[in-house]
Image 1 (cartoon, rainbow, N blue to C red):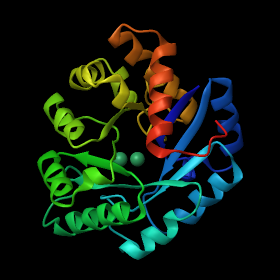
Image 2 (image 1 turned 135 degrees about the vertical axis):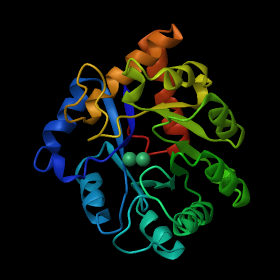
Image 3 (image 1 turned 120 degrees about the horizontal axis):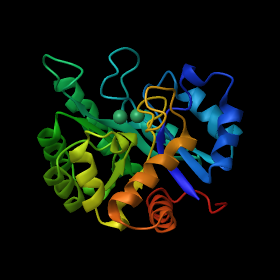
Image 4 (image 1 turned 120 degrees about the vertical axis):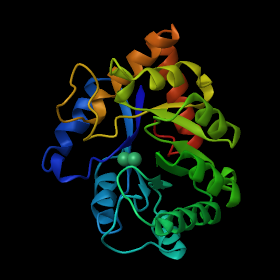
Length: 257
Ligand SMILES: [Zn+2]
Ligand SMILES: [Zn+2]
């Protein structure tokens, strides 16, 4: 079964449809999904979902684009990450695309997440957009490779992917890989070693072809996997087995898989 390694099933877009979408996962051979945190205020809804559905997991963190709400400190992240179904810290990272001005606070917040991940021994879910050099530099300065984790919804160059791999990170590919013009993402999806690759939806955003422009949800990760298998010239079964094994190894969720 496939795993959606990154979604936002707690978002209001899905209100009241969660059970239906979890059922759709099973119908599409998608066994698990990981819900990434974006604010501390939303975290109780994330936790409620992973407590309700046995095959959902959570990450706790505050997204680099989040400007309102509580600023996370290490102790808070570590306390919330102690929940048995919280398997990672994130999403965190840097985003110089959405926000402008002095973003030192983003870098400070990123460092806080890396330190929390190292202290509690859980991997990082990293969001990076137009900030690859600083993301890699801060990971090196904070020894983020010791926590490990994944660069999610990867859209950077193959060279950035190589640098992330060299630090010990995994690369997760989203539905962008199904978009005709996404040549750079297709190239990365082809070249990342199979034992470092994950797949995701980032739902509700970025629905893959043939659902582009519609509401995305975890079951649609199947289309992401099919496109990557096609690009690599391997069977869907091989890609499924590799990416699910990687997910289990990285996040070590309970063995009820
Ligand atoms: Zn993200
Ligand atoms: Zn996300």
